[in-house]
Amino acid sequence: MAVYIKVGRPIVEPREVYWNLSHEICAAVYNDFIVIIKRQEDTFVFFKTVMISVTHGYFMEELFFYVTEDSVGVLISEFEEEEVLDIPLAEN
Image (cartoon, rainbow, N blue to C red; front, side, top):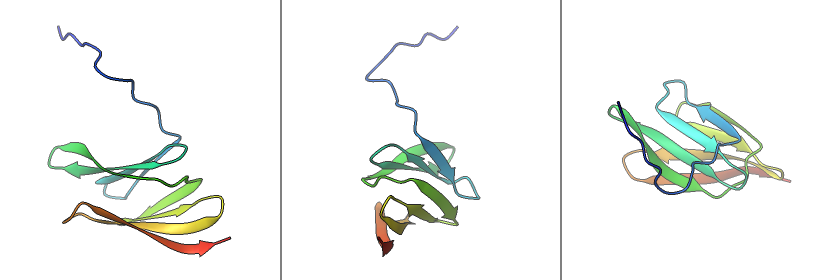
């Protein structure tokens, strides 16, 4: 029988979760930020936190297109380096 003990604060449930088609990249959307999680061998690990408030999103390969209240943009994940590029495509 496994015994679990509570450590740290509870994990907050995201508003939305988006996956790329190969299920190697996940974008968990919260109120004011996104957490990017990527697959590494047999597990998923935290990759980056990006401070944007997303209302809708869509993955195309490794590109995460998103909509905020006043802009449209794309996050580009370069997996060789720990970098996420946030490129605004349009603003209101």
